[in-house]
Structures are given as structure tokens and as C-alpha cells.
Image (cartoon, rainbow, N blue to C red; front, side, top):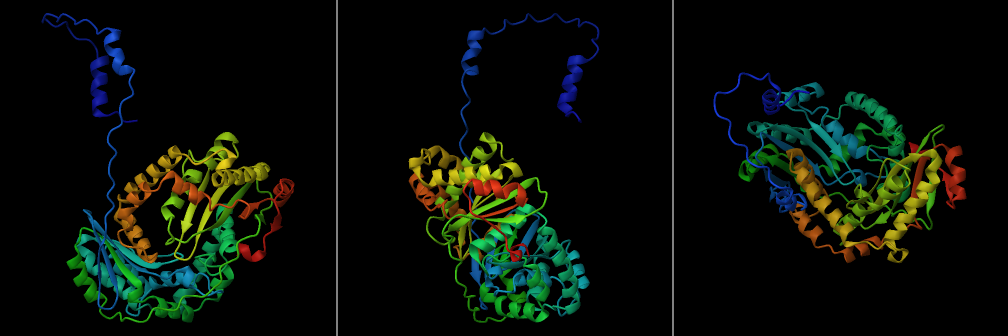
Length: 492
């Protein structure tokens, strides 16, 4: 390990070869301070400094004549993040066409009517960048990062990609092959497979279908499907242009108006109508057999209100103290007390259409049943304070501090801020949502969080376990759980 300059100099002074004695008279040494003189500061714990204030930026907002929303956050950075976010993702896809939104976003970056896939990639590379694509439950997007001086060229390229996709059949077949390989690889990860199957059971279709698609559905998607989804959902009135960097709104407005002048307004599509999956009448355990597995991946979930329903911040705090921190209840039980796992986590997931409390972990196969039993026990204790563990001010304080402090990490990079702003838009929330979050979290009392915990119903959970059937099923049934084998389509 390289020593610092200071450490090297100090070592040389302390350990160097002694030279001739100095002719100067040595100074008379001062007496060492007595123990009583130093004891007072050694015994006192240093006081914490003032807590830093996190001020999350509020984007400037403006709407162009065609309905396209501009959201601009000015940050002192050498690069700018440009993304076009559409309020339609996997939840806007009809049953039997899962993966359509995500594959459409990918194919937008695989050539336009003016440029081939390779020419489009070269155009992005000339800006020192690459085109990006993504899709989720509530959104689809394309994006690029550029130097501040190249923002106008980046917007022109995004406009071309959004308005003039080629959807070339040859490119679709190439991309589909890669896509299917990725789906197959994804399903080899036990944790991921458990989550994919669990959301399907909890939510049904389209809301619970895999964002990237089920294998049979993706195989059937056509160029016509992609073109129709793009025509009906990639509309200026349903989209936001999110720019984060050292740019101002007037500059962006002028550049966006020129680049997107040909994007005509059109009526928003009708939402996909689908009945919500019925809540389970009792806790249901579905087992996906993985022969010889020495571990079991657990996915445990139940419905919660959607993102726009009141009480979201209290639900966040509730989930955090349950399983969002190392000191959280589920992690302390399963990891520290019982040594069942290296870690367990809970999340209060919330979309535009649904919400869920999700707990995930991985345990040794032999302790699958007791681990699940302890997990359910902790959920029940959080719901019912009469079980001896009411939610405390200290727990809520830790959860609050963690959630607020984590916002600071989001301010490090422009693309993280852009992702937050785009998510806020796709969820239909006010642009000031990120800025207001610390205040809203601070306003939640322990009583509010306890009310959120009262929404837990550990008697009506959806549980998916990926593990060896012979190793775990008898023990689960002996522990009182109703266990069924997974249908084949849950693993597609």
C-alpha cells in the first residue's frame, strides 16, 4: 500500500539514522499534564454536529404547444442527461403481449427511417455517448447523455428516434434472439424467478406480467404490434422531456420546439381494462421445484394501496423499519437471532395502479419452514401491538433518517436525478414531490406508521418459494402451511 506523503515524512523523522548532536542548548521539558487534567474530555462523548439539510431540486416545468412537457433541473455538471419519458409501460399492454412496451423501447434505438441501426449508433457515438432505453410498469423511455455544448444535437437525435422508428423486421429478429436469451438467463436466478412468479400470482395480468415479457408472448410479437404500440402510446401529450445539467429552460424550450415540431398531438389511448386479482383468502405457498437446490429463495407479498393513495410516506417508513435497514425487525430476527440468512429485505412497492408489501430473502433449504414462520410472525407483531412489540419512536426515527439521507445519494449524478423526475412524471405526481419528501416523512408520527402497519395481513399472503421440493415441502406442510406446486406458466 502506498504511504501518503505525510506518513512517509513522519516515518523518516521518527526512524531515521541519528546525526551529530546539535550544538544548541536543549530546551527544558515541560511537565506532562496530570491525569486529572485530561480525564474530563476523555470521559465525554463528542456531541454530534448539526444535521445537514438535503434540498432536493424542483424541476422547472413548461408545456409545448403539442402537449410535450419539459422538465428541466439545472445542475453544475459537465454532462447533461436527456430522456424522453412516456406514461405507458407494461401496465398498458393487453394480456398475451407481455414485453411489448419494453421491446418497443429497445427497437426505437435500433434504427430510424433515416438511419440504419449502425448509423444511429455512430450518430450517438459522435456525441461521445450511446442511446439508452428502458421500460417499467408505468413508463417507457429513451435517453442519452451529452456534453453541455451538445444538448441541441442530443435532442435532435432523441426526436428522430421517437418520431421516426424503422422497426425493421431483420433488426427485430436479431434483437428478439438476444431478448429471449436474456429472459432464459433471468429465470436461472432463483430470487428473480420467485419475484416474477409472485407478482403474477399477486396481481394477475397485465399488472403482474413480467415487464420484459413471458417467453411465449415475446416469441409471438410482430413488427405490427410494435408499430401499433408506438403509434397509440408514444404521444407528446403523454410524454415528458427531462433534462438535467448546466442548461436553462429557455435554451431547452427553443431546442425542443425545433426538434419535436413534427410530433403532432393526439388523443390519449384508453386504459387497458383488467379486473384486479382477488386477494388470497388465506396464506398461499407456491413451490417452484429446483432439484438439488441447497438454498430456497422466498418471495412474500400482500397488496397495499397504490402510489397516489394517502399514507404513502407512512407505508414507506413501515416497510423500512420492518425490513429496509440492517437493524430492521425481519433482518434482526432471520439473520442476527436465528442465523437463517445473510439478509432479508422488505419494500413498499407502489405504482400508478397498485401497491404491495414485498419481503424477499434466501435461506438454507433445511430452514425454509422455520424461516418463513418467523417472517410471518414478525409481520403479525408489526400489525398487532398487543403481541408485545408495538412500533416505537426510535424505530420510526431510524427509518426516517435513512430515507431522508438516502436522497442525498440521488443528487450525485445527473442521470439519477433524471430518473427520479421521470418517475414522478410517470406516476402522475407533482414535480415538487422529491423536494417535499423530507418534510412529508418528518410529518409522519409513530401513530401514522402504526396505522400503516395495521394494513398488514399475515394470514392472507402470497408466498413463492424456489427450492428443492423434497427438501422443503414436507417441513412446510408440517409447519401448517398450505403448499401447492407452481403451474408451468409461472416460470415462463
